[in-house]
Image (cartoon, rainbow, N blue to C red; front, side, top):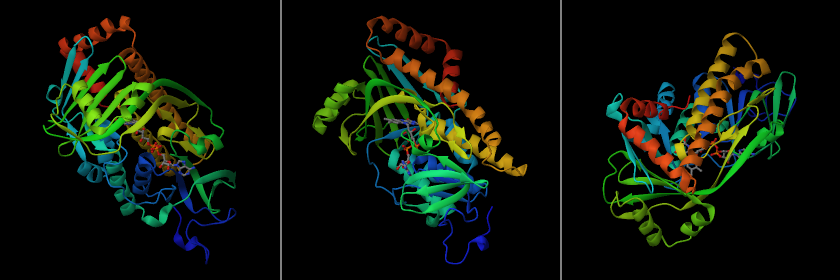
Length: 409
Ligand SMILES: Cc1cc2nc3c(=O)[nH]c(=O)nc-3n(C[C@H](O)[C@H](O)[C@H](O)COP(=O)(O)OP(=O)(O)OC[C@H]3O[C@@H](n4cnc5c(N)ncnc54)[C@H](O)[C@@H]3O)c2cc1C
């Protein structure tokens, strides 16, 4: 931890030429959900943190670009441990029932929280509302002065530190640089970390609707040959839609007039929500998966989408990021307790060992589900139907699947 008395006269905290003393423990690049969550967690542990993000730290009116996320029980528990649920809980809707239907076979399985411990499985949240909630937490814990509204340009290592160069010409020194800069991470490239990536020839339409009937805290999911369609409860009478189709069909749907898009959604979703009204933009997200070969390099760590990206069929992406955040925080706290430098490779490798194997498993599970449940091959239909019927009839198996589905590690 640095004392502000160390800052030389005429130099603002953090705005230091390369050769100055270390100013931060950690510089986080990327102020998306992952970067904001990580900043709040590390600040809670007393680390001196700076965040670099080109978007200013101002709220965006939700619903925004249509994306919506299911936060799993594991994320809720971590957020509670770090006192972040007081921010997130206000904009999230609890989910206590999940209905999964298979098309065209018609098999169906219903997961009910009361079959387990009665607590919600998950929470639905709109993308911008979650960012606003995490921005609140950032402001409370770190203050706006720790936010650098610019882009990461590169880094070099010197004298037990990493010097992070910013596009506006400034440089920040820290013990550790963390890349939370998303799938196209420049931190990952600058650290020379290789990436495996593959595409699905599918795209997700994402948007928010207001509806006539209450959602009853139920996720409805249809596993269809072209891709899954999911309705996620949001606060009030609103739901988030994630609708996966082959790319050309997804683009054609997104180009429809709102009334026609909603008419087709009603047909596909069997009218479960009654009359619908579009309340956000309609986003189209081409689907791909990727995994960084390493999560760490000397004085560098990758977290969230910078490290891994998955198909959205099982609502894993950000939930995996939150598990990464907790593991990295534990690693750094333990190193500090032992008086170790938090940027050393033999410290950081513990984080990689804690998370990369678990994420590899999740990536392959998600990939397999995406291939089995959204392939247009008619031969797979009996297999899909059989899996759902088995889950519907065998209680212990269903409860096991529900328990596995609520956590990412
Ligand atoms: C359709 C869809 C549905 C999804 N559903 C779910 C779900 O139900 N549950 C779930 O857990 N996940 C879901 N996900 C995944 C989830 O949205 C992502 O995993 C999560 O948002 C990633 O957050 P992030 O902060 O790691 O990355 P990003 O959101 O990509 O944020 C990266 C940030 O880094 C900044 N940045 C980039 N380059 C630089 C630079 N050079 N310098 C400084 N800053 C930089 C960007 O401005 C951005 O703010 C879904 C994704 C999609 C597409």
